[in-house]
Length: 478
Image (cartoon, rainbow, N blue to C red; front, top):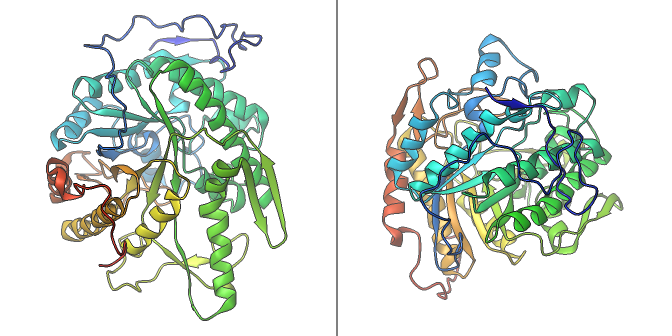
């Protein structure tokens, strides 16, 4: 294992320039030897208006585990739960074989994340072997004609930061992340053109800082607002870093969107509660990029911060799974205040989520109001029954087709996920994967759902209307 002792560099060129480890940001980053590339990066736009990128998504922690991450010890249930947090589903050891699975699907894109805690397991340590592994993944994909889509932060962080009392509410945490991400960008920009700085900052702020359900387990609107603000500050800074280092790159975030429907449509209080959750959960991030203000408001009270976000988003990644129902009597700032119920007649998935393609159309329409291209960066269903998974896939791809026909600028679709993997706060069990994983042997088996997505990707006309100017009378008919 190759390690160095320097800390990752700051992303601010032109200022005083050395990092805590003494490495100036304007000097070349150390590497044992450069990864060979067969040819230069393509010169065309990575997400063209007249194209469509078919892909599949994963995250580092959920597939490969992370022994030194803040999630490794978070509310561990038993030895089996502990084991999966350390190894995931064996992706770290099976990377080459799993990339072959991506190739055999015939998709154009593969979204994966880099593990901050594997690269920086202790303060001041930089594990170059781990960096080179991620660079090898991107280079392998590029050689095979598959677009690597890299997520720089997908929920987890090194445990040593938590041990020092640092999290997204602290300036020092923000600086550590930006320094790490800056160095990763410079290591990977030779092969990566599409970047996601953050995965679902609204989910991370709500789960970890408002409701205390995930690390670091904080409660309260103030903590949630501070964390969300710092996450978006990190995005703004990294947007500049990526465009300065990687010509032709496109930079976005992923945003989980959840339609909130009043339990009793005739109830003013249910409608009010649903609108409040929609504003806090779905629209706060959109409004931040539209106005440059991060606002979380309850009643007339709330918190507002101004950030340089306007114009710093090349595309928005939309993550969508389900819709929720809201009853005012169950609403409480420290509880979700919503629930799932089969009101469409399509049933619930194995995670208990309602199947609602109508909700998918709603959130895509809302997201399109931001005026940037959209990519569906996650959509999927936990189903052991392949017929149900395929039905879910078809109904949601039909929504994408109708939305594009209606003029929405949607440039890609990524299924969650390539493999069955660890699900946050649940563990092993939910089967989102196109490849079934035997959780004992870790063997992968292709499913009929994989064949279905591969067929859609091969038949470009399946969800891509020929006339992008064609208008549709409705997006939600089923």
